[in-house]
Image (cartoon, rainbow, N blue to C red; front, side, top):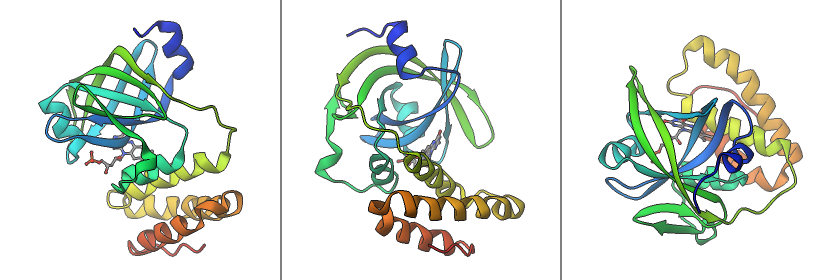
Amino acid sequence: MSVGEDYINKVFPHNGVFEIILGTSGISENLSPIGIIRDGDNYFSKIFRNTLTYYNLKARNSCIINVTRDPMIFYKLLFNEKSPDLGERVYDGIPYLENSISILSNCEEVEVKEEFSIFKYRFVKIVNEGAIYEAFSRSDSLFIDLLVHVTRLDIYSKEELETYSTVIQYEVKTIARLSPNLLEILKDLVALINAKGLKISL
Ligand SMILES: Cc1cc2nc3c(=O)[nH]c(=O)nc-3n(C[C@H](O)[C@H](O)[C@H](O)COP(=O)(O)O)c2cc1C
């Protein structure tokens, strides 16, 4: 199925940042959580250069954008936990997720910044429409935000760490209250966060 403007407008309904899972394959097959930025009809990602995603895109500029609302998929792929319920599949050598909307795209490096590069997407084709519509959970959104903070602990300045520790504490407490199914994972994350010098409690 080709990618119509109406379809893309439904998937990414406004300007700003959306969280997706990017499938890449230039060096080795990989699926990672990545933010996609919509600016009018243009779609970009900022990809940090110390990641496999970056090296993969430099080696092969095709990728698959996977749209999912399942926070566990973000968690598992961030920590490289392989499990059959991820539903990993492969299209033309590129991994995608069977329970997502998966859009094959061209992904070109258009700008090189100090720590990351900006890649621009050109949508080619929808290769999978396996998304299931779920009820909205605000805790899921907080959980995704918490994961982003976890990936940035090493690059935050002292001042940023002070500011964000309040946010992280709020997110941990609220996620624990609204999504008790995530308690065990929260324990692991709190241990990881506190190992970086913060004092977060569950
Ligand atoms: C919700 C979410 C969004 C993220 N967005 C980005 C992003 O836009 N760019 C990026 O380089 N890393 C982003 N990350 C961090 C990468 O997923 C992380 O660095 C990952 O370890 C890269 O893995 P790789 O080396 O397998 O590519 C994000 C992480 C999460 C949880």
